[in-house]
Image (cartoon, rainbow, N blue to C red; front, side, top):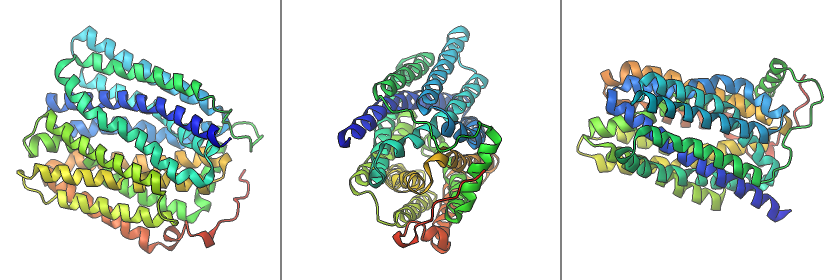
Length: 415
């Protein structure tokens, strides 16, 4: 039993790593294509909205599906659908000889729909095969697996973007989806459908039950709102990295890939350290420190002159290093403290709160970033991020949520 869960976990994540790699390569290629064709912060922000908004809205409901039906099948169908969407975009590119902005936006939106079903299933699978005491470390290792793919993808995308027609790069995403489905089957996971509820499946009733569980845990509801504010600040500036690299610092697609690679390298190191260490006993201590570190890096970025590209790369590395100590531990914290029969719904709703905040920030970025100044927008985002860290400290329910002496009684059943 001890080695079985490790084998299942490793096999599952090998497939996910390849899928993430191919998706990231195609994503970078599409963003660089939009940057080269339009040079517009508004277009890049709209592309990010297209990639986030469907997932944010649907995540309110897809967690209920993940709790009621076989998560293996949902993940396989979602991966397959994303692969077919990528093939459709390849067809458009070959037919027209170019990829219109509208077709790219539609593709990003449809891939987001698939991710809305896939993501809560993948997150809810982990605590059902991984021992509770290993969740923090496994969060670090799974983040590390993803980060290896993200680390390789900017460099590979830069090489392919310069040498290969864009539709062929997009075709890699479909190949990655096939690989992910194959390794999902090889993992031989158990039927991962929650069995705690015997009432007929009613989507809205199940979603309301998930909301009730979320609201019954004061710390979780407050932490979700803080994470929404965090997403409002950080996600928009992440979408501006290529534009800042090319326009403000005068670089090329290679320079943009260097920044993304530095960020991913930092994430890899941070994930490796988290996988070995697991974080402090009270996860909120580690998470709060990471938020302050991210805010400090963004504030420093906002003060850089155009000649300080290497400093921008170094701060991107620092942001990547801090990220796993917040993002991965947040997932592990929810996995530990939410009952299994509600886990998909709570993860979905929490994801929706954070994801739906991102388009608001992206909309503000599209409207005001160029007027304020792209680099100054980073400083503003840093200030908001530091505020998130302060809230983690001053709200008692959040600060103390993972203290051993504050264990919560099991949640009573919600109907």
